[in-house]
Length: 338
Image (cartoon, rainbow, N blue to C red; front, side, top):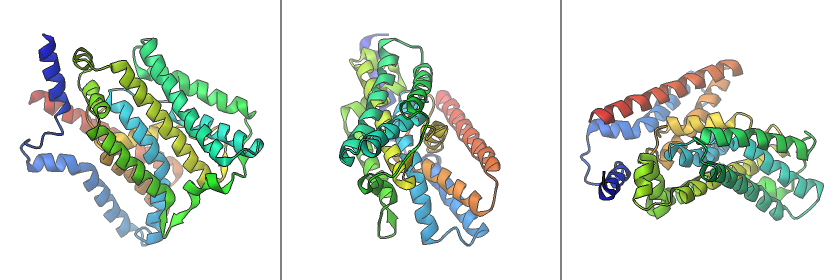
């Protein structure tokens, strides 16, 4: 296959979801709106089952609860779009907030320096993930991010001798515990970040390259895309989102602890897949990921209101994840037949 053919193939992969002339059918509309329809149906069911669900206070509580997973899911989306994954986001969150705690609480430094350290540490650890993947040529990001997951968790425990840190300044707590009217600042932050990432993925060259790499990595490389550079950007941004999620978490609980974010990567992956992204890469949207995060938050909140045990909730969410992945597999089979 010639380089010209490979470029054409890459462009075709990139334009699957963006061609305005693509014939619109009812099936395609349902396919695109599937996650949103699932969210609406879930809200209707829970409203019927509990009179406490569809209230302003509870809906704003759901918005606040979804914020951390929505931010982490956004970083995870970038990795999954490239047919990768980031298993270290929970550990990166923990390291970032522990370092911020040392700076602002233990050393009494300016809280804005602490915020910079939190976001910078997340970005740096994400960069390490990307560098390990591209420079050491590890076979899959599952390996590199699994390794950094253990390293990050160990660092979070070591730097504070496994002790929690509490009593953060008001400036650090602002993103997690303040409101604009009835709306949590954390959810407004999510909306702002999602708008920026939507523009990034749909309007920038790097965003288009991310989709192209997920569609066909080798074709993207041969068409002139610096794949290693793009992957490093992807994992750096994933780390940044984990650090930002940590900042919101600290604001909500006024505490940082080494085991923060434990298993949060599974919820982030679930949000992305429920939102319609594909593990095979090249398919997924920012809006879908936000809907996926809201589905999980609504489900957890509704099950709590119905007094369903935490153990049973895990089982339910696991079933939802399996169903979402199965839908993705069916979608891939259909696209191959076409």
